[in-house]
Image (cartoon, rainbow, N blue to C red; front, side, top):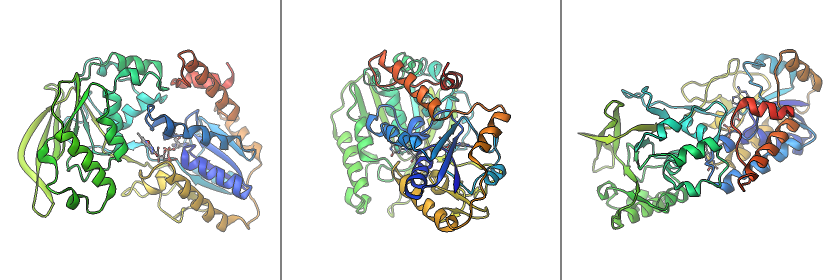
Amino acid sequence: MRVAVVGAGPAGIYAAEALATDHNVEVDVFDTLPVPCGLVRYGVAPDHFSIRSVRDKLVETLDHPKVRFFGNVTIGTDISAEELISIYDAVIYTYGASQDRALGIEGEDSDSCFAATEFVKWYTGHPDAQDFSGQLARAQDVVVIGLGNVAVDVTRVLIKPISEMNETDMPEHVLKALRNSTVRRVHVVGRRGPHHATFTTKELKELGELEGVSVNIMASDLPSSDAEASDGNRVVERNLKVVRDWAERDSVDTPKAINFRFYSTPLAYSERDSELVVERMTVLPDGAIQPSGELERIPADLVIRSVGYKGSHLTGVPFDSAKSVIPSVDGKIIGAERSYVAGWIKRGPSGIIGTNKKDAVATVATLMADLSEQPSGAQAPDYVVSLLKDRGIQYVDVSGWKRIDAAERELGSLSGKERTTIHERKTLLSLAKGN
Ligand SMILES: Cc1cc2nc3c(=O)[nH]c(=O)nc-3n(C[C@H](O)[C@H](O)[C@H](O)COP(=O)(O)OP(=O)(O)OC[C@H]3O[C@@H](n4cnc5c(N)ncnc54)[C@H](O)[C@@H]3O)c2cc1C
């Protein structure tokens, strides 16, 4: 049996591992990027070294004799979904959920208002990222909208001392922009209270440990009873302890600050006045929140909204646009023959990297239960190689990826680091070719 996997992020690689290792199935993994690992490379914060090192484990699967990697191949454009299923016995879609959600407020489309997805792409060295060097060289106040871990990552990257970023694999142009950054204050804005936030405690706590950075919280934003507000949820309980400690700290003069603005709904952004207008929310006795009518203006030379990721439709594959996922039952796509789904495009953007392993293994179990008894109708392994060559698509195979990997390690070693990310697609492709 031969299976195609669309997306070489954690879900795709874990699916390939389960197919090849546990079931002896041949797998071709396609990714639109020349390099594997999805958001583990282009999402997970570069200063979170141990989480990023998951990449080293993930790419081992690409060395499995039954697995082939086809980077720089976009399914839906270079090969259609209809073609793909005609070439393989089954297809597993694991193409993630990397579109941003909009706020729908006035001024959101201005040149100083961005999605966190874009900012994260930039600092991780994604080939399609826009450059933020100019913005960071002018901005003093940045508003980050959102109360989740991505908002925390973005805040930390904006304000962390550069001496602690130099060791990361961020591309040199990103480190240079952070070195020249004029950002002094990050205002983290969210509609709800600290006990509604989806931060994990370790990430939240880290903000209070940054050298030369104070964290400010309005004591009135804290719940009257932490026990009641956390309602037995240990993470919320620990988060409340962290923010309460911050609220109780004596104020000190620091060169940089993070100001949390809970219970503040963004209403409009004015680039000309460099301010975000928010409406304060009131907490009712039953815990519900409602607009108070009180407006506040928060200085904002730059606004980065981090209000969630969502999946997008791939032509020829069923899609639930209300939930922004591919509809499925136990990983089998509803309305498509021999087609399966795993990872964020199945569940939506939630869970940690490891959640995708359990998910991918479950989907592979469904696939195997459906198809393992059937004779293979797949094309021979060379078929897809000829198809890509005929179409003039320069795909990156595992040896091409290894050449990129070696070049990144070599570049990093020049500055005494493990790796420096190479961000230009042209360079990545040229390295993959062996040039
Ligand atoms: C900013 C950020 C920080 C995070 N930090 C952490 C963290 O610290 N710890 C943690 O546990 N988790 C973290 N996560 C979550 C983790 O990254 C995800 O759980 C995981 O990457 C989801 O895996 P996936 O394979 O479903 O999607 P992805 O990782 O997005 O992989 C999807 C792959 O599909 C490819 N693709 C897309 N469209 C096509 C197409 N048409 N054809 C071919 N290929 C395609 C993409 O290029 C990508 O490589 C973070 C996520 C983000 C966004």
